[in-house]
Image 1: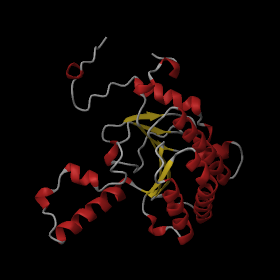
Image 2: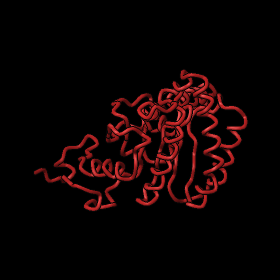
Image 3: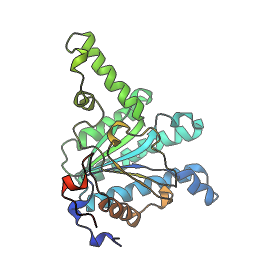
Image 4: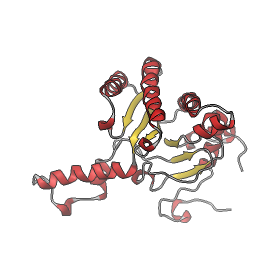
Length: 251
């Protein structure tokens, strides 16, 4: 087993990483702090992850910032998360642009207030032509919602006579999902010991390698991310083929 990332060919690293950033509340509770302090520390962990992905030349990083189910949390916590999101966008916009990072926010924006929507559009427009890391923030996002909106879009085409039902293909559905122009995630990471996908990018995770760690998200750092990278490089990704078909030598 490889002991460190130094022994790994960087060409073997994943192109697209998707992370469920879990454990902010538990991190705060362990320190006798309010849950909101955990979310603030979680933002700092996200900044570390972005920085490390830039250094390792990762192509796409998707962070599950706020799920469509998170609206069920206490109103005070939801309000704080929304304000934290606005503040983070305001504070990080120029930094992201200077680092050649392209920011996209995926998810249903209909529940966001006008100020937040304007801030999202402003940062997306500012960074739209950047060619470095593509940073996707999944906010008010759910995998089921993503598939639903894709089906609705296809349904409208059928209703208008542009498309017939027998023309629906896997490729067509894929084209109508979020970030359809980007590669599907190669590596899924979830922190805090939970081993669930939790309605994240369900369709796109079909052949993704799943990595779970006990580390709470605010404690997640470059070293922990490197452990996930090493795990990924040790996986044999067959996509339905056999090892022999892929020319893999099994020891």
